[in-house]
Amino acid sequence: MSSIDILLGGVPFGRNNVGDEAILECVVGVVREVCPDARITVSTDSETETKNRLGVYTVPLFGFQAPYSHKQMRACLARADVFIWAGATGLSDYPEIPLAMLAIAHDVGTKTVVWGVGMNDQLNPYLYRVLPGRRRAVLNALSALTFQRVDFVERIEHRAEKRARAKIIKELNRCDLVVLRDPETLGAVHDCGDVPDALVGADSAELLKPEPWENITLTRAAREMLESGARKIGLCVSAQRQIVHRKELIDFLDLLAARDYRIVFLPMNHSTDAELMKEMRDEMKNQARSVVIGGRRPPGEILAIAGRLDLVISSRLHLLILASVLHVPIIGISRGSKVDNYLAPFGHTSAGSVDDCDFEHMRAELDRLIDSRDEFREVSEAVHEMLLARLEAAKLRLAEVLCGG
Image (tube, rainbow, N blue to C red; front, top):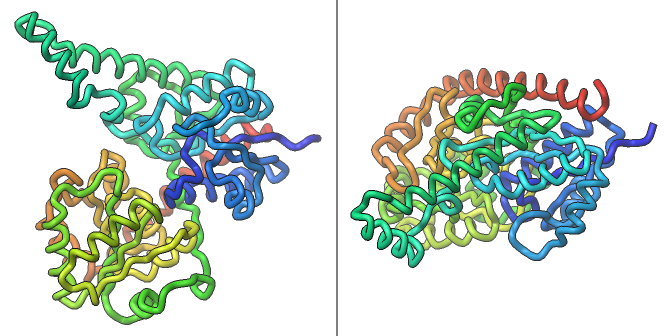
């Protein structure tokens, strides 16, 4: 029997996002576990690095902004036996891209799997809202001509969302397997329409394993801090949607440093986040008690570093996931409902949002969690066990699709 050809894509792999790369590494592992003879190809913007790190075949990153061949994309989807939309929060963040890939796969007869994909309770406002600017001004002027009887901005936004939600339902119902990231995603999908065969799994990054500590290269300052007995607070805020009250965050970090905590800036994007982290550190009064973990690092290294921390504060979902995998206490800053959804099984709520951060809540949570590591571990182990059980059940269904059982 010849091996099955599997194409993994629909996510901007190879663009320096540790969370996406953690998903990819774990999805590759899942596919190899359930179908060892599979020939795996990844659509990525970092072909050589992905090929060398994961031992897979690669093709260019299809669908996302940058030059790529639509003809090549269609040929790759037609050649594959199965196309797997391999995770992330694409159902709300950038649904048009993977939905278009699913549509091509369906049209050419390729099997399709949606695996561990998440959805916020709102679609990406940058795609489906009329943002301030000339177009919105024109639409508002047209509304004024009707004496506000017709709100043209609302009408256009409603139509755009309605079309997007209809596409989501159409293509998901054509898939051979739909495994969503969490119950909240299932609810968000069902708000669009009925997908009766959709299952709830978990984020594949729950399966990630840490890199051995001795294999990790760090600056002398970073290693000394991470290996010290001082209490260490990890922090990552996304450069995509920055904290509005940045000065207040810097003041909060200086307050922690004054209490003899060490601040470890842990970027989840070695380019954009890292630059922001460096700027924030430069704005601190007590820089001596902080360090930025620089360099392009594979997910296993970030996981191992997170495991050395006493607590993690993050607006990046996947740093929260990685920290909790090793039962490090977490505090989330909401950047879409995905952070709130992840925190819910832990009994946590976000410390506000990137637009309105609640520093009093953050301080109270830090004081509560930092002295109750054993209690957090007990909860975290139960949550992790639940998520792994959901993934195991989803793997059985995936095996049926890929290998006939």
